[in-house]
Amino acid sequence: MDNPLTKEQISEIKRIQALTGEDQAHEWEKFVKTLSKEQHEFLFKKQETGDKCFFCELIKGDLKKYIVYEDAKVLAILDINPANVGHTLVIPKEHFSSSHEVKDVGYYFNIANAIVKNIKEKLKSDSNILVMNGENAGQKGNHFMIHVIPREKDDNVNVTWDKRNMEEKDLEETKNLLKIIVEEKKPEKIIIQTEKRERRVP
Picture 1 (tube, helix red, strand yellow):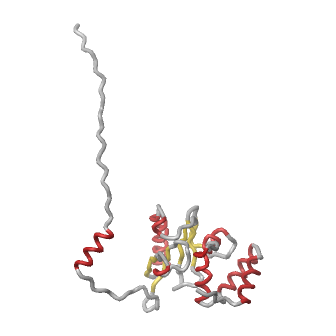
Picture 2: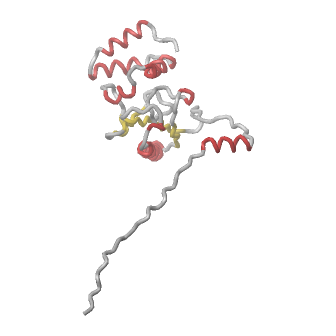
């Protein structure tokens, strides 16, 4: 992707990078809101070519965050450019590019599920839980995260797709290709040794 940023925008980024603390956070938040969709995606895409991960910097840095939940392993924040009001990002503090790299991925989905419950109770909304693994799946940055998106009727958020017809042989081939085989562990043989005592004749 060619750099869609103007010279003025690049100069502004350098100026903001030289700031610290709340000044940097405030200026960066204002700057991001001026970007087009293409420019916004370009900044996230840069991390895949060796630049620092935006989300790692977001977690560690002073940029203003609207925190919904935080602990030692995860940060859940409101998306500042949401699909709907309440759109939340569940972001591991450790860097993972994709969900398959995460050993305890269930931990993060438990947090996402707690947010779903809050959305249902507080916003009275339905919701989607979404993960994008890779560019072709819609992933914008190189940091695994879970999107929790509140849903309303006719809200113009589209996560549907056109259904495809599959032949039985194709389904069978795909099943065999993707089938997960779990090796069952055989129970260990337990040998109990008893002490032999000599029987004394009285």
